[in-house]
Image (cartoon, rainbow, N blue to C red; front, side, top):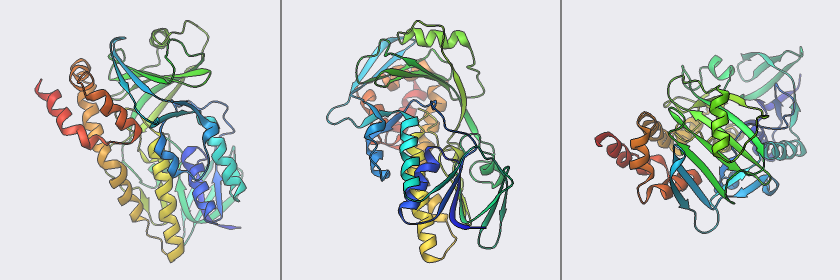
Length: 374
């Protein structure tokens, strides 16, 4: 049995980008992915432009739109527009293209990919992991990366992240055309969706439309609700596919590592609890996971605690405030919109959060005070 330096369970954005980082450093990497190739990935595709620095590849082919402005409405009215000045700090990517670019790069650097295979068991040895799969094969590695998404089985099995994951309920629709969206603009509508919002992110020739709800277990698998949303964004069709998905959202400070194993991306419950942003935490966690594993391999060490520490610093401290804002905002959305979005500086601040220029902690205490006392 070949001993790999790293085995990654999950070949999506988090897993494939980690594979690129590690194989770029010369390590032997195996990625095990349970599904086959996906032609469409249900993701809005919004990404802070500066996240390109966390990817050692050229992603120009994946970029569909450079966002110049962000539109907000409340129950389809009361429009507020944030103009993004200078070079666009926020872009929209086609996720299936981005993922394929990463996979191709990783393979070109020597990464092995196995598709349509499920992991049956994990066994920790003194200095390695043994992974048994449903293809009756077993694989062994020095380090293990869990990257199997929001429905992760193995992060729970290894007790990584929160004991009881918290989920946002989402619905994703991709439609041909741009509806009534203006060029280089993204749209958010609050109030129409209980405990959440709807959004529209334009690609070159199509639009990603989504619905998200973030508190409790409010159900959005409602065809009439989706129809109202797509009508609002300028589409009048009845034949479309809705992809429903639960997203593990950030829900507290937890270790994301054990000896010789760590968890990244959606499986680590890193998704933004206010805006459902998943690409940025996926790329951040992939980068720092690869850095931590690299240091361990260089120093013949197995302590990955630095990964958990740096993710708390770079991501979780901000998300702790994002969670507090979400819990107040989505319970009192009309007040939240009036005091949080309609303020003169608020749209710019939200745009800066989307672009990664600001964190929730920069604005949270002032926002929460306004929401609680009015």
